[in-house]
Length: 217
Image (tube, rainbow, N blue to C red; front, top):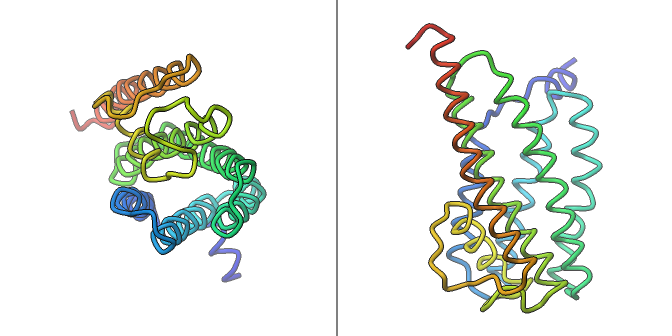
């Protein structure tokens, strides 16, 4: 009974997940090129992966799919640390894209199907935005494997630079220190910037609608 209750009703909400994502972003931003730095980034991603599976465990179907997608993601996440080659790096980026895209989709369903504005709804919305930027960093990483010169001053295994470029693009800040060169890279950068703006627009409209529907406005 205790195990079943643990699987169906996770104790931790979106707030703890948002904190985990912020920790990964901070780790990626502050890290260097040493083995320890790479290890800490991989450890942070693994913790977020496990936390995501746990958060989705309230639904047996979501739990099953997240475990099936999470296992190969966990394997490639650590494999690139010890025997990195371009195809393994590509597999790592792609498995992360698949897993965290599924997690984001599940969170979207939970947040936008909510009947009222709550603290968990706000935190869930923040998690989705952060995960979008996180996913796009892996997409650009995969592109950098297939097209090594798609982005200037960056390579497929530079997690910190990929995360930085992704969030600069998502927020349409665009410093210009890292530039998409190929047509594919340019279209992906444009798509991420557009997605970030559309998400914020739709999210604000949804939250305002929920606020007034709940009779608080």
